[in-house]
Image 1: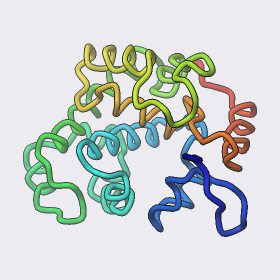
Image 2: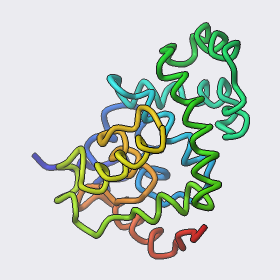
Image 3: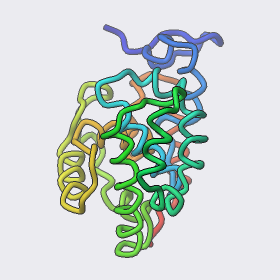
Length: 203
């Protein structure tokens, strides 16, 4: 099956972005573009954890609610959340009310602080794991890779939660660590151009 469809402008885009109204802008401006901001990286990891067992459309539709509930995903603020915050979040109908995922996000904020202290920044750590081109095969044909497996193991060893290889691979797609736009997708070239202009942080 062809992995692209013509968009409203007639140009080919990844077929998946035509399946929900929330997807086209996300596809065209975020997915696969390189990210160096620690807060945004933390948010993306948290949301991938919340997606576990659910559709990305569900998460994307609730993203602004998540941002409000988690104070913009400020790492230090989320790390300071306590049991009262967990109970507060469990009553928030605007997000996914899953105790394990909420507690994992708080735990991961604390682990993120440790990782930043050890590695300089989340961005420096993750960009050091940029895989070689084509490691995972043709675009949109894999849900894990050798790098996502290694990265997942390292994060789990550091005490992170809800960071299995599939969630980490989706995170790598979202943050631009890999360009998984379909061959022929007009945004694939734009994401590749953004990567050539991007300087990965060193620490």
